[in-house]
Length: 263
Image (tube, rainbow, N blue to C red; front, side, top):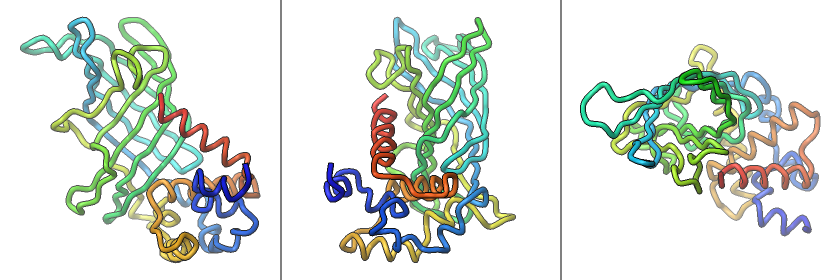
C-alpha cells in the first residue's frame, strides 16, 4: 500500500502526524512536551445495561467502577451484579456477582469539554472475575460513554456502558448480543480531569493550534473525535518509544481497532 493510499484509507494524515516524516512539522512542540503522565484523566460510573432475553432470562447487569487512564495505560476496577430482570416483583434473582479489572486502553475518542468533564468514548480490555455462583475469569471488552447534557455535547452514543464477553452468547454477533445501556438510562458515566492540577488528556486533544494546523492540512475539515483519539495514540507512542509509529505500526493499530469494534 503506497503512502498516499494509506493516508486516504485510514486517515493517517490525521492520525500519525509524528509518524510521517513529511508531516512531522505539523506536530506542535508544545503538544509533544505535554505528552506523559500529566495527561492522565479519570472516570467513574454506576449504571445498568441489558443484553437480550435468552430462554426466558432477561440478562441485566448493575455495574460500577472507577479509575485513571491515559491513551497508553489504565488503572481501574469495579464490581458487578448480574440479575434476571424478567420475573415480576422484587427482589430479582441474582445470577452472578463479581469484580472486573481494566487491562488496557484500546481507544479514547473525546468529543468536547465542559468544565472538568470530557464528553468521550473510552474502550477498554478488561478481565471479568465472577466470584459467585462459581469462580470464573474471562477477558471482555468494555466501552464507556460520557455525554454532557447541560452543555449539549454528545458522542452520538447513549450514556452508559457496553460489554462484550468473547466465548459467550454476549457479543455483537451472539444470540445474547452486547450488554447495552437501558432506555431510559439508569445511571451515569463521568469521564473528566483533575481540577486541582488543571491538566488532563484534553490538553492535547483540544489544542487550538493543532486543530488549526489540522484544518490547513485537510482542506478545512475539522478533526473528528477519532482524529483526536489517533493523535493521542500517536503522541503516547512517541513518548513511550522515543519515535513516532511507522506506517506498518499504524496499520496494525488500525486493524486492531477494527477487530475490537466488530466483537
